[in-house]
Length: 465
Image 1 (cartoon, one colour):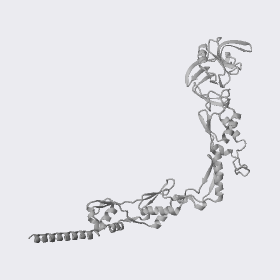
Image 2 (image 1 turned 45 degrees about the vertical axis):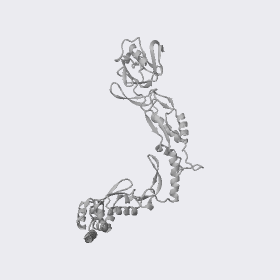
Image 3 (image 1 turned 90 degrees about the horizontal axis):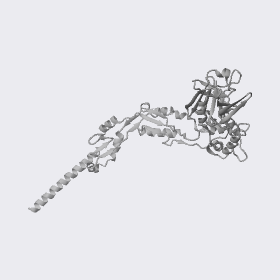
Image 4 (image 1 turned 90 degrees about the vertical axis):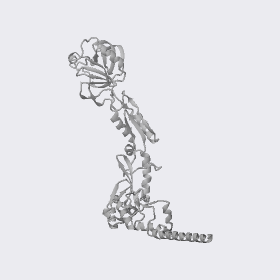
């Protein structure tokens, strides 16, 4: 009985194994032409679907508008899919995917999910692609054999025009874009695709490069002139005119093969600097307290470069390649340097209004009527921008036919100065026209006391009618 039961059990087990094997083989045969359980492609569930069904779904979700091509300057050019009759289909890719699937290992699909990505098989009209490619602006850069190396002069100095570097290989660019379109890529950088190369140089081009190295070194100047609040850089735009040229306009080299500094070049630069920034006796515009913008000529106040010292400095500093911000030497200095040398601390003498004002850091500190030179006797106080060059107390002013004691004396130009006048009881108005001074600026005692205390030697005095 037990033997019979054992035989029956073995037979049943054998039958079950045969059935399981049949099922396994059957599914292996099934999955040879079907996608395994748990297969996802491009986000689409594929188990139990035919290639045509999956292809329709993949085509429906796939979009390709064309490719954007970037050149080395990041300029972009677009080739649309429509312009090249772009077509795509996933059937071939799905067939290849299915062929690579091992149907005998289908059971593995029950234990893991397979998520894969496929790209479509692409086709397009290559003739139309060629037409679109040839219309791209970067192809107009010129033929390789026409590309030169030259030295040109611009407003920024001499510059090297090198057309032999970073040159587009047109065939490489075309192949790179073709491959990107075949891969349905939305953009491509020709720089990243390594489509740009440097071209070989002729012996003459190499000579031009060697000359450029000399020019580049000559133009490399790091000196900056500090002219008040303004800085003047002696850069290539300046130094380019310092290079000595021969009679034919070529760069003249010395016996060692170096460029030469043109004689008189530094002197010319310093002279131009002085012309622009020397202010002694210059014409200035000034915003008066009475409200109008006036023009004043002459006077002794201002800045004046020490041209001899500056020429010596600049010649040596340039040769030694000094890099620094340089404050020039002056034979005369105002309280402020630069074109606006009056600044916001000054004395203003309005001889038409017969008023005097003292501003300190832009704030009005003293305002007073005055009496200036007698115009009827041709002793009118002269116009100009002058300055307080001395301060004295208890002084006797002497002239032809007079000797006058003053408590405060501040000369501003020669014998003309600002002082108190104890002999006067009235100031302002038209007194100066018939009973004015000998040219000085008569000031009430109280106002003179304040001005004398506040004003420093060197303060500008702006005098006008």
